[in-house]
Image (cartoon, one colour):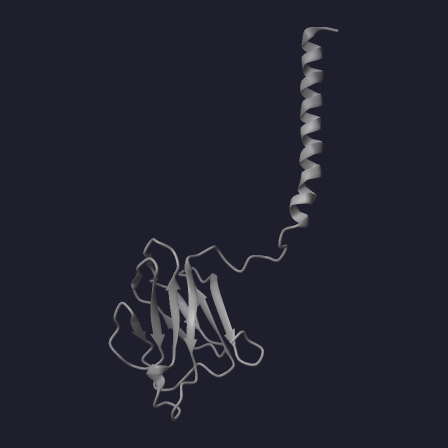
Length: 155
């Protein structure tokens, strides 16, 4: 047998062995992993605390109703185009807020002057019910985080 033929057979055996080892390893990796589809891209931006259905007469306490959006990372993130929605489809769109690393902003339902720590939806009526879901989406419409509370929720 020529050296060239022996070399080709050796390379073929190595490639075949590598393919078998790789195929055997795939089920082992998939077996222990979470097979659910991811909700969205990994992000340092998350929903924090929620103050819903604030005490007092409905619509008189709208600024005491809020959802906190947190940046858990070290780098600042521009929230321009991000949206926060409830189950009924009410939507707040962030307009050029730069959220520093390891900081948060409260999105109040009512009216007020926007700052780095508090922004306002300029609504006259409460929107967050005692049983609701807040959904945060990035500027491309991808779900970044959700928070559900009430009887079937986590709060």
